[in-house]
Length: 250
Image (cartoon, rainbow, N blue to C red):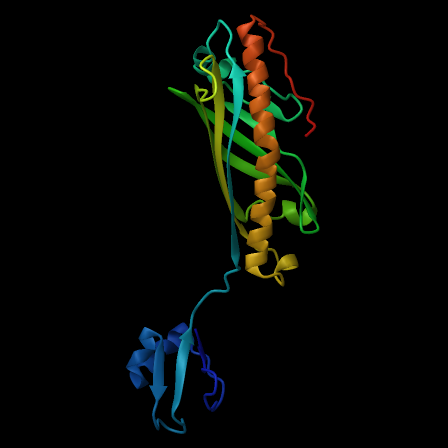
């Protein structure tokens, strides 16, 4: 526990109060336990107001967030889209074999494209779970690890992330025979600001990071919906193989 003097106070010497000494100082100044005290003519002390600084050295944390709603029009065949959307996750086609791998019946590992964050390369690897819902499904993030630059990999224990992608369908407003697939995605990341970028204002880090997340969603969500539409067409025409459709390229 350290005593620090406010700006402009007359310093009479440096004082450090240990936990063991705190009781003694509190007998001189009962307010010490509350975090501050004023010494008034005690021994050789001048009138000095001191404040107890017992705050741990906590690094700054930045909060990044992005969201996006996208839709794609589907030409419905004889087999309705509603039936396709009710398929259990175990029957989903792995749409992009180079970026998505099945972990179990309801979980998938997704390799997001490498991206630049200031001068560092970041490659998120997402573990997601698919939850079936009456009008579609909900894809939730279970965990996330980072690949890329060494300083990025070192942050794996220093951030938290959450993501929800709600995929649903509805009648098209433009045609009575068409349907719309809709993706409503929200992602949030809280990270410890690394020493290497600590000189950059927190607001700039949050703004840049949120813009990066927004750009990733802008590219990936329409691509995801387009592949989902192609998989529906393959399923509706009786293609039992449902081979992966993606090449891993954006």
